[in-house]
Length: 296
Length: 296
Image 1 (spheres, chains in turn brown, red):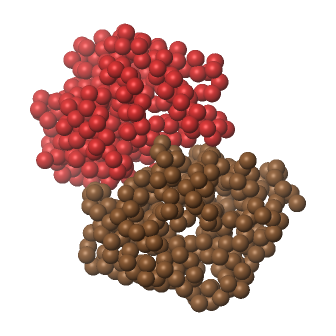
Image 2: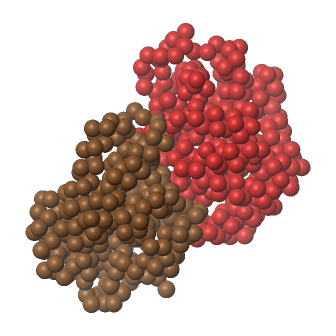
Image 3: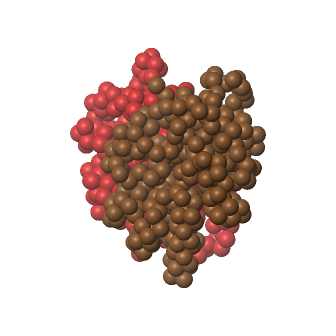
């Protein structure tokens, strides 16, 4: 089966892998890639396309109910590759900071109830009006120290996500994999690990050596492309795999070599992708995943 | 004298430093901050505001003529803090790459004729359709090796500018100061140095140690702010000093401690700043420079 690709609309050059195709064995749909779908619809969509795993977000899971979601996912025979997202622990005000920690404890419990061991941590940006990046980073470290033992109790790892420096001010003060590992390594690997997301780290001149260093710490491997010109809304600036500048196969080989054999989540925030038919999005990303991420 | 600030338009909280004020001794106007001005107008604008230096761009200099420009600048008693820009040496096609090197030789000669020892190098992004970041970076290193001896002959240093990773794909594959120094250190400091531009490097978790490492290599220190939400056009995303998230005084102290005592260039690509009265822009940046860059 061949078809038009999202988003270019051009004729797909690759055949769509069918359910049961061994090349789909690690492919996970991060549900933010198809936000028009409810949790139930996303689960069904994964099954239709033959994807064995799904990355969930807290808000839609809470809408559906965590227990209901866990049952739907299990009934469908899917794995939950990660729960997005905890974090946002940079508040300078101690009461806000404590409330953020409470929310992260709930997120850890939700992850446990969904039978995933990976809570993706987007640590947060600078507080309103602050220019104290060092202080914000230090509050992240303090928060991880408080949460790490509870994560282990829940059987869940805090997966620190280094984010592209474009988000340093307003979303994630952890900017490189090396910096995330510096923090993660203060804790046992059962408590704190890292996310490798192609969109966030592809530019890093140290990425290959840092991925190697991350052996035993990689909780999640996410893929999305860097496209130019960058869409105007930086939060929706990720491209469909293969539409941009990233050499996915090189990164995937490095992550494999670092001993990560878990799911590979496609996470794409993009207005064009979001506007498209979700089923078309899923078959497009399955084709692109096979040719660009698995590669040769 | 007090006045409304560009771009917020709010009442300025700081007094405008007058010509002759010792605090202006290192302040340079990068002419891209006031693109409505010709070279002659920018030179006059610097004199009116008491700025002792100007950063020039090749295109307006070529319009005015390099010899004429050199004479105007000298007659006005200004220094040329840098010439922008050389670089764009990532082409995979050997003929294109060679032509780019020729153009860089001309840029070095222009810098020499303008009596500046600093040619800012924006090295270039990925060639159209390429995902080979390693290859592009390696062609940059090859180009610098060819150009470095000629730079010394011209009495000009190639100032490698690490750029914010937002520009990695399409403008500058050197993304961190550490990476730029790795390359610069292959050559004598008389031939190759680095630019420290706050906008590009403020997020870097290693910035303070890398600035210290850069002792003897810093050819240019540029300042511009990181603002959120980021303007839609990423090439015009820089903010007026003090409008954003950067702790300039901390960075300036680090640069001072690394032994750089040269000019501090204000370079702001921003549609609002460009639309404002250039004289107002210059007095605004002078006020902001005193309070945010010099700080306490």
